[in-house]
Length: 295
Image 1 (cartoon, rainbow, N blue to C red):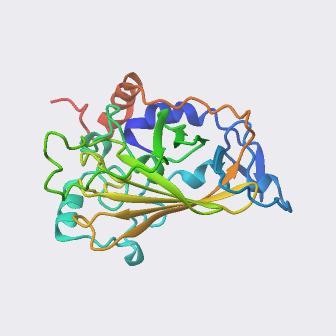
Image 2 (image 1 turned 135 degrees about the vertical axis):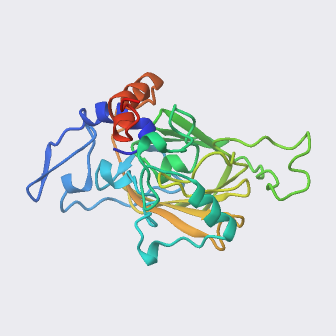
């Protein structure tokens, strides 16, 4: 299960996943109606269309490929030296103050200070670094809109030539006419070649976490997304984190291969419901932490 706050409805949603596809004798959970690379062995996709990332996209290897419970997919919180993030002193201090329910600093779910339980916004980029599932990309002349399955959220990446707001280091950031901090930030994008769309985002509310393992970010967070269309059926997504207050250098958080689905694909509902979070806490989280013991 991907996140304490989402466990209750994740358990219910998981029951809807179907182990229909046998891959090497192992049932593979799948989104109903989705097509994955292991369904199309030996296929030879046609060339990628130019300047087009629109459509319904699903992790090519199956739903589990986009679920990173222990932290960003390229850099999980698993204690391995190669996955140690380049923390600044402030970054490490902030990370150690976080109490996630996954990763090397995990605590029982009833003791977490994760901001998301209670269905607070997980924000961007956590929605991609933690639980990336089916998404629909809509292109217009003015923007690119991404609709996410998890918690039924959406983002706008502007392509009309506007610039990002001045970053949080600017002396004008706190002025009355400065843009407000946002859970999902401000995003602009452009095509860097016929098959590669790059988006940049800033202006984030620093109360969110980067991922499920409690990696922090500051108000200076700058996120770079790259969507590279490789052929008619596939697109590679890469997410890079740049936050000079928390990390000494930028680092790649996720590299994920996506597969195009039918335009008629119905993205199922996966909402964070406070009533289900309360049920989960009562039945699982509090007893696991001993909070239901007689006083």
